[in-house]
Amino acid sequence: MFHIQRNKLYRTIKNSENHNSSISKFINAKKWIATALVPVLLFIALYSFLNWTISIFQPIENNAVSFKNINNIFFEQFFNILIIADVILLLFSFFHTDEFHKVIRNSGFIISTILIRISFSVSGIINTILIVSAILFGLLILFIHNKFEKQLAEEIKYINEIEE
Image (cartoon, rainbow, N blue to C red; front, top):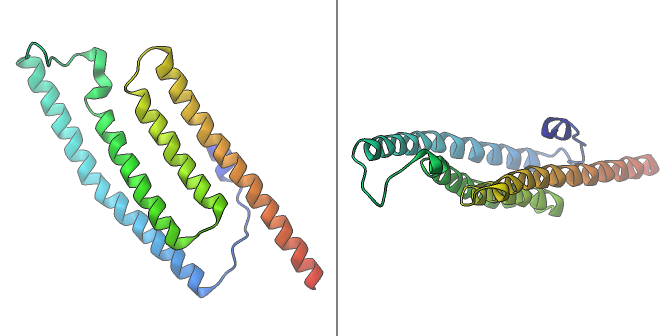
C-alpha cells in the first residue's frame, strides 16, 4: 500500500538552480546519515547479541534475559536511533522546504516510528494495536499528502492554462 501511494507523485516543484541545489544538499545529508547509521547499528547489534549470549551462560538472578522480552535485546535501541535519525532528517528538511504539507508528512512518519517503538514496551493486544496504528497512521499521512500534492498540481496546471 505504501508503494502504491509513493508512486502517486504530482510535480508541483518549480525547476530552478537554487531548488535543485537545495535538493542535492538534502539528498547528500540523507546519504551521510544513512552511511553513519550502518556502523552504529552494526555495533549495537553485535553488542546486544554478545550481551544476550553472556547473560544466557552467566545468568544473574534479577537481570536474566529471556525470550519473553526478545524485543529488549536489540529493537528498542534500534528504534531509538531511528527516531533520532528521523528527527535530524526532519530538521535538515526545513532547509529544503517549509511547505506545510511536506513538514506534516515527515513529522507523521516520525510519529509512526515512535508508535512502533512504544509497542515494544507493552505486550498483548496493545502491542498489536500500536503496530497496526503506526502503519495505518503512516499510510493515512501519505494518502493525505498525495491528495494535497494532486490539488496543488491541478491548481498550477490551471494557472498555467490561464496565463497562456
